[in-house]
Length: 111
Length: 112
Image (cartoon, rainbow over all chains, first blue to last red; front, side):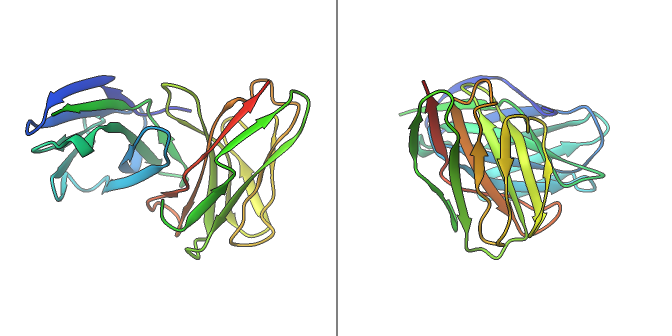
């Protein structure tokens, strides 16, 4: 079942700008993860944030989690052409360790 | 793509034939997963395995089968019972529960 829903579906920005995408989910989670997928390739793990955490940083990435609103956001600062990809959120359940993926946000960074 | 290999990258089959997709990992991970991705969609879980000789159905297991005879290997068979098998198939592994997953490069299967 697809629990996470990303918004927007697609995003086009100029190089150097920030990109923000959101993920909403329906049921309680143990953790939320963000992945990147370049066209036709496998997914690459970016960040994992646990349900008791509110914010996490990794390089130019910043993830927030609001469990009261059942939502998360991924911010990519100072975007580069290499950031062009699809970004997926995935939720890890409380009672199992399967991940439920959203449909993704496609980000295009224009030079 | 980490230490997970999937082969082949592209696979073509005629309708009615079974086909097996390979997935091997050298990360010493206990858990392995198979996902299906259709255009413009997220990943849907087919099967997963927490430990050797044990596996569970995911959300869309009908028409698929797996085995986990070795820790390193988790092959997926797409049977002729799968109604719409053309898709991009991704294998992943994880060190354990509630951890990040590491993905292979994927196999694009086309059935005509």
